[in-house]
Amino acid sequence: MDVRIGISESNQVIEVEMADETDRAALKSSISDSISEGTVLWLIDKRGKETGIPGAKVAFADIGSAADGRRIGFGA
Image (cartoon, rainbow, N blue to C red):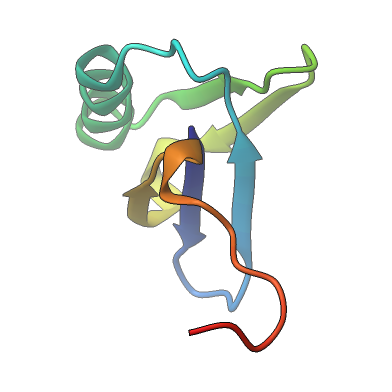
């Protein structure tokens, strides 16, 4: 599952590739709680790397799926 987090007051977007079996509802709840409570949002990618994002700085969250497929090249 691919997750993109936009950082407010910055052009930076943090992209985290999480395990496919990640619980989407729990992830959305965790993001929402971090934003509303102003706590740090911790995400763990599928290789075990941990990324911390201050909830007060989250501008947007885009939760995709690895099954969406990543297209490479000029295919239609």
